Amino acid sequence: SIIRRMKMSRSSSERENKKTLEIKQTFLASAISDISTYIQLADAKVSIIMGAVVAILVGIATCYEPIENFVKNITLCSWKGVFFIIIVVIGLLSVVLVFIFGIMTVRGHSSIINYKSKWFLSKSTKEYSFVDFTNDIKRMNDNDIIINMAAELYKLNDINRQKMKTIKWTLYAFSVFLIMIGSMSVLFLLSIM
Image (cartoon, rainbow, N blue to C red; front, side, top):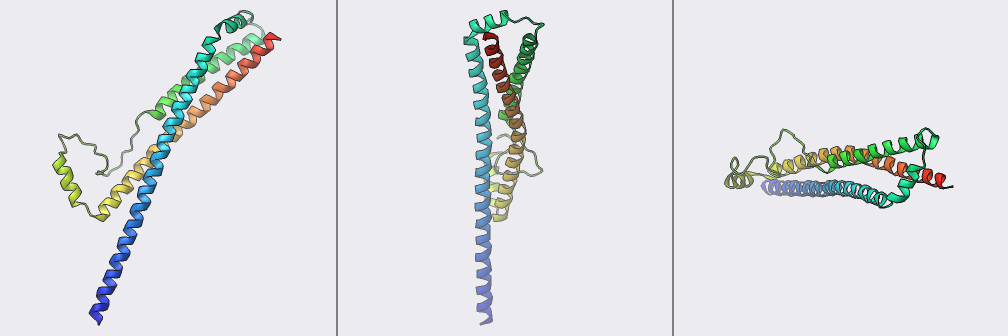
């Protein structure tokens, strides 16, 4: 009777540990999927912003005749001339910053932690053969899998944090660019009147 209870208790404990392990794996898999989606969305947002800047610049370039007439009628020493120069300088600077921070966001990011994950391999195929890799995978236990998933989630969060910093500055520069376009339009309308 005591032995049966001990076996039942052990099997109950094993089932509980298996359930906890499955919950951890599900949590980590969902978190990895979510953070990967955020990273992809950040790249897509920045690509859209850079594309919008190019489209606006192409639109401006197609209206070169009215813009040329507008510029010819401005005297640089007037308030319109000074305002025009300020708008152009800030606008060009914001375009450059959109592309600098945009490229910094889209470029490959990495996160280095002191853990050799089996998820993404840092060694070349010559240094770490497929046979060695499969042998390492076979030797992994449930805890090793959890640690590998946790390491990848940690790395992805660090990459996401890096991207969020540069995407913030991309958005600021894009906002300044739009404000300068709006200011230039107001100045253009004022000169027509």
